[in-house]
Length: 261
View (tube, rainbow, N blue to C red):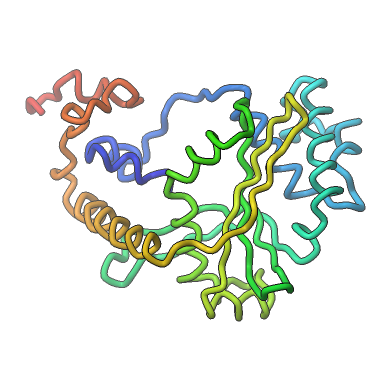
């Protein structure tokens, strides 16, 4: 899903995914704290609270990369979510990584990613996909609207619908619900500085929007497959779309190669 925006420029996409170039290391404190929070939510439970881990974090742990004050804040908030939202973790599988071939038509294009939490609701026999978002922004309607206009909910739900039935980590009743299309989505927004979180209600995705996303994704997969098969198609389209200013590989287009490209 994170590779889809690169397809706004074929050259950017090819350098990032075809050539495997990596952008310069960086990120901000919220990116780093988000990684730590995800790790705590993956490894902690009600019998092993996150706050205990902050008292003496392992030297090689992600937690140890944060200042002591942030360690405490993140641990307190992780524990609060565990205490106040027990239904999230009663029957749940954490951190599922998937890497699947999109289709036999395009064997060189994979759908891959990590689903933070897959839980089960006995009340309506559904599986619920939950994604954590660590942010410094107010936890209000604006941030919910912003994330509703991203592709992640559709991408991850589609992956579960297409492939989830064969994932070994998922219990049988999870797979039965998936086969029946009973899949819901929600975000859990986290602001550790305010010791606050916002857990959205889990909702089914619109069938019409889901079909629209599948069509759009198929178009992008077709483009990606073509670029992988013929790298000469990786032209610098970003100059037309105003993308170069944020591209980490802009120097490759600003300085021509020996053959003039």
